[in-house]
Length: 322
Image (cartoon, rainbow, N blue to C red; front, side, top):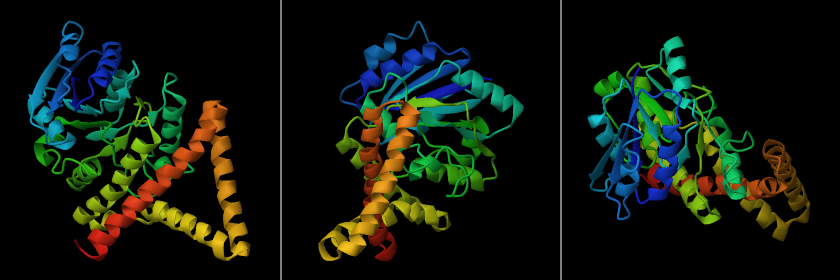
């Protein structure tokens, strides 16, 4: 089984160096790497070239069109039986491809995804962001489930694989951002292919490294959910409204503190209980009080940024059809 690993890249040379080093350490080496420089002004040509004697690696430069179309560019040039997509801010455990290969031999999947986690080397903030994006106390907790409250399992493009026959029948991404991976997964499902979660195909995902950048990313994710709904209206589920409901509840609580202390007491108590649960769960998972404390803020951002982005485009695109 031969894999083609496809990595879109935009102005992140240092990230690609760390990612490529983890690929050098893979226990299963039947793979090629295609790095697609998507119109970067800060390129990684020399860094990629330094791995020529360590990996079967190819470097391509194209005009900037976004990550979805950069992946398509890689698909068109890949030789593998399976195409594996990584984001440049991921670190790949040494047994990743071995685990995927063994799983695919035992259970035929046309496309797959895997979970993400925080690496021990990550900063406390990166670990807190990872917690909020994977916790059962936030909507991030449904992302790594084989079947979740949102319906079918949809692999995410930071850790996603598909067979060559999927590419040949379904084609590639038709939107380059704003939920392009979920839209693609839905079309793969509708074409009759089998998609599954490989639980031990885990990657370490760095994500954003500041509260501000994390807010912008999650606000974008909320808008992306509505963009997907424009293609597939039936995929909008109750769970997708949870961040918006939480955000409205938080705003209601703030207003209640001004106009009704009785209601404010109840609202504030519920919010405190919720964040206490997050604190102790994050502490138990990371064994760090600092990470647990930061997880309160990253979880708040995870829900409210997504909620505001979701409501913004729901009003604009669904209600007013703009």
